[in-house]
Image 1: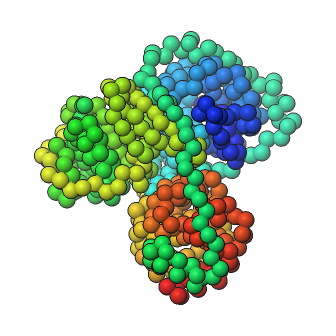
Image 2: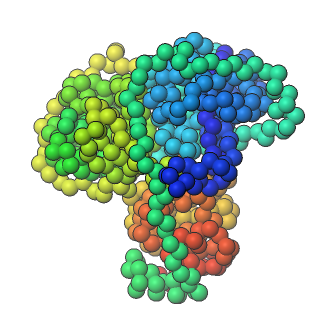
Image 3: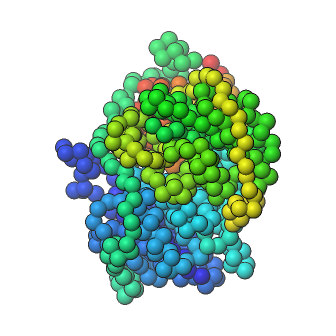
Length: 250
Length: 321
């Protein structure tokens, strides 16, 4: 079985994102990481292999050569090979899903396992769009994945607004990872060095001949007005008075 | 402007209140574009009984797609039916609420249409070159203003952004024929684990009491915070850390990847206030923080901060209210 794991390069979620005076994201001090949800997806693919399934894991990224850093980390974590679809301009989920669909048609993975959203644009679209383009089932927001013994289906528990839901999807399918699917392993430096011998292939995005898609144009980025700190109260009584008489919310 | 279709949120049997923000968006869209909108109700045989209650928001038509094959509204099937409804009505725009239902299905329809989609819309403004939207990025640390071409698109609406829809003239009810054999067959619904919740819905509650990891275990969480929530008629919420450590169920998680709320009163007890958590509460009218650590980041955005042991302060608050 082959599992395709798409990887996005994003700013460290624990860092602070600032704007330049020109209104772009200031990249000077950014530490770049694998999108945390994609990392969870990759970890799950590795765990399915460790559970005894015969699985090949292909990590794929769509971006500049700088993204190889994250693909190398993915290889160090346990991906078998990596593919960089090289392209310069940032792309929206509509376009990315077309690139991934083209790769999926070539590689024929049984599962495309990816993060439910990227923590930079927070779109939460790519997996679902990809499933639509490939006309295959989707299981989004997964907190548990089990393959059936014959390997034809995946049983997925999903985190939904009312609690949890379990569905079974016939493979091939797209599964998107939620936070509580697992805790990704820590990758030590020797593993990263060792992973240098694993194959990382680059192809030019233009080779995939994706027709133009209607673009989402970012006109502007701005920092929302900060919420100012109010005041400290010294006791529960003072708090109750404030809520009743100042804020009038109780 | 071409008409807009609203995908109503259902559990297959009944319409859910999460539908309302999308209808409110549709009303705003209709006003601004001098356009019109339709509603789509998709579900099992029982869903037809919902039509009378749920029409009457100024929609032109209410389409009902009812079939046993839609009793469990899986993404592949509902997306297929939504595409059919878009074609039947000539609508080229689709809106729904950015709930787990909408986040699952709407991007799939966008993929089927090969149309751009804007997630988590905060506001909208028409323009000759295509509609312009504002939406949060980087966990709400930045707001992006984006534009898509005027031909077609899909929008998910932030539940707290457009208020409640106004009642207006009911539209005509029409049935959308469903061909069960032609629906996708690759997803089977197995079951659900839904908490019995006697408290108000977290996303729409007027008061929300939330807690973090200091609450220790589910019993303490319920005992300390539940009592205050019930006193104020509020809902319970939790941080990611509390959910991760099994203190609170996943559906209570507030933040970037959980629920986004805008209650009148938000009381955070033992919540440090990570960027990801603050992303979910920024629109609360009044934020109260109770934390023993006076340096916790939550105090930087709280309207009222009480540096105290929550195990004493919260029960005292409950008692004195």
